[in-house]
Image (cartoon, rainbow, N blue to C red; front, top):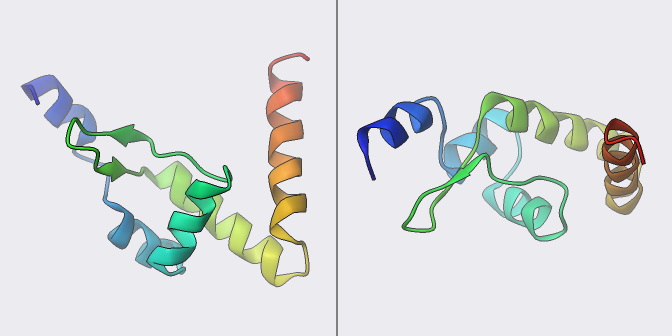
Length: 89
């Protein structure tokens, strides 16, 4: 890893601390990754996934929507639709 990469990843955090800030378990974060609800902000050469504040806020939204009765599949579909519209598809 070079110095520029260090500066770019300073504000990022590993999955455990990110999950704690988002109010979910590490396993929930891993599941959200697996089903495509979230993506790591950066992946180090070692494979360690790092997350930023924006992703943590997205996880909080997912958690709140899920607790309100929305199934994770519907939440994922909402995010996919939003991405399609943002890309102009």
